[in-house]
Length: 88
Image (tube, rainbow, N blue to C red; front, top):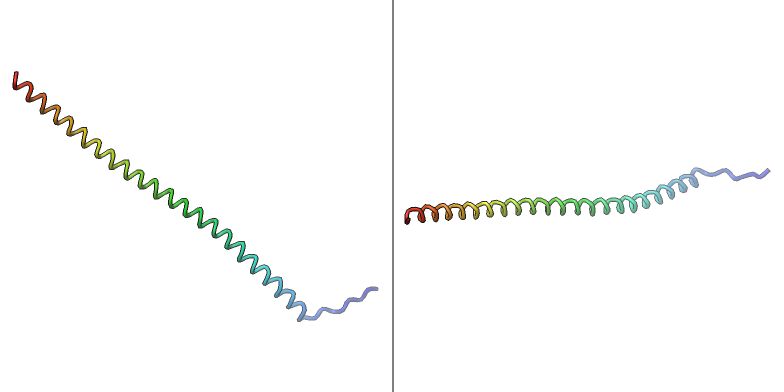
C-alpha cells in the first residue's frame, strides 16, 4: 500500500494560515468593491433627492410669484373699472 507521511501540526497550521490569509484578502477586495458600488448608488440617490427638493422649492416659489402677479393684475383691473364707471 501507499504509505503517506504523517502531517505535522506545523504544516497544518501553515496551510490554515495561508487559506485564512487568502480568504481575508479576497474578502477585503470583494467588500471594497461592494461598498464602492453602494456608495455610488447612495450618492446618486442623494443627488436625486436634493434635485427633487430644489425643484419643489423652486416650483413653490414660482407659483407664489405667479399668484402674486395675478392678484396685482386683478386689483388694477378692478381699480380701472371703478375709475371708468365714475367718469361716465
